[in-house]
Length: 195
Image (cartoon, rainbow, N blue to C red; front, side, top):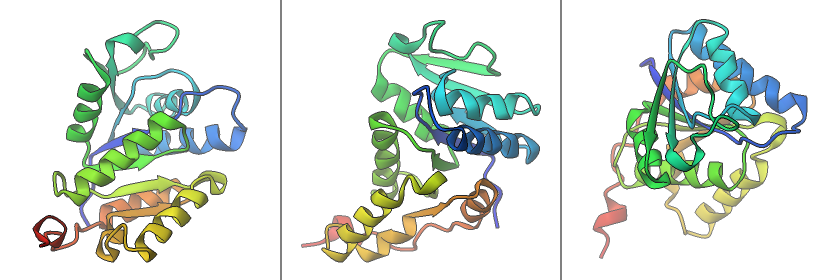
């Protein structure tokens, strides 16, 4: 088991969410702080972004926010972060979040979160990183996506060996333990070397 120190979290910023989502995000942030890990995330102060950051900060954790200039506004950006990195565009921001992370967790979210977690999986598939990707499946939120990924494997759009690139749990502590136990598949080269 290798403890992953920098955890990049992808999360929605929408307000008016059911408490179960906010509580799970806050608990993840709390666990990251208690376990001496660093939270890397999109720097938002609302929704699950705000909840995970507050959970870490209120328990003495270190939080690195990564944001693009268009979103770096007082009504959107968290003002209490340990460190804030800003970028001109969303692609540079996303690249930095992936570079900093030693593991990735997708909390429930919308288009932005889906984009982020799919890019993390794509980078893993291309061996641009060797880190695990986890879905925090609060309230069964990711059940449809996990079913879709299973279908993509069954219909041969995704290699069966690539199923090992991601994991899911509804429990934040269990998901962190799974990510610590993660070992990148030994050989994914057939994906880029096929004839």
